[in-house]
Each structure stands twice: as structure tokens, then as C-alpha cells.
Length: 159
Figure (cartoon, rainbow, N blue to C red):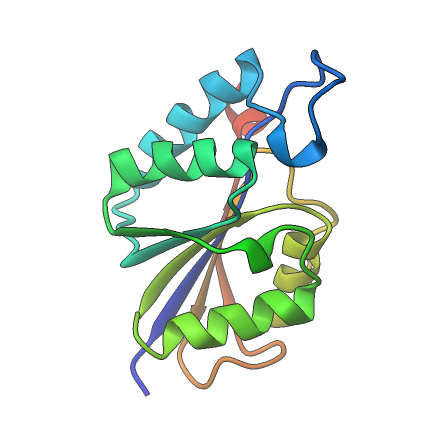
């Protein structure tokens, strides 16, 4: 099996200014609009080029994924199954994506993303913050605790 790389990316900070919007519709706030391009450039500087960016279609995740796509390239797809998904559901989506792609970025929401990291990776994380990205490499089959942590980046590390 070829080596597989998974990038778990939580959407950037969203706005709560308009309480008439549903959770799904909430946009990025000013901090999110600043942090997403910063993180995209940081990932580009690390040489990260996912084959596929698979994102929740929720507004805040979609906006984050579009910024990553513009900077990092790769194919961009939206999948409704990511919104409010459990770690196990996300795991199945990742396995499905790895059937075609060797490098996948998953853009979505907590708690599912943090739980997915903790399920797959050799290093647990208490919380992936907004705009945080975790890199995991699999040198064998993609299964529970077979991934090796490559990095854990988030904007506040650099502020």
C-alpha cells in the first residue's frame, strides 16, 4: 500500500454576529478571514499539496477550504456527510477518499475532527482549535492508532 497522508483542518473562526443565521450558514469572522490565509501559506511553506481537499459545505468550512484550495491546489469537493459527523463517520470518508487519493485534507468541525485525530494518530490532542491543522502519515494500513503525527499547527502558536 502506498503511503497515505491526512491533513485534518478545522474551519477558521466563525461569526456569531447575525443570530438569525443557522449554524450551517455562519460565515467566517474577521479573525477567521485573517487566520485561514495565514494557515494556508504556512502549509504551502511546509510543501503541503493535498491531492484532495474534502470539506463540509457549511459556510465557515467551505470558505476555509476555498482559501486552502486557492493556495495549496488539489481537487476541491464538498460533502454534506462531514457536517456534524462523528469520528467514525469521518474515518469511513477518509478511507473512501484514500481509495483514489494518497494525500487528503479534511476540512470540518469539532468534536469529530479532534476525535478522528485521537482515533487514528499516535499522539492525542485535547482540542484542534479553529484554523488548526494536524498532519498524519500512514506507512501501513489506515486504521486505529496506525498514523504517525507529522505536525500540529494553529494560528495562536505564531501570535
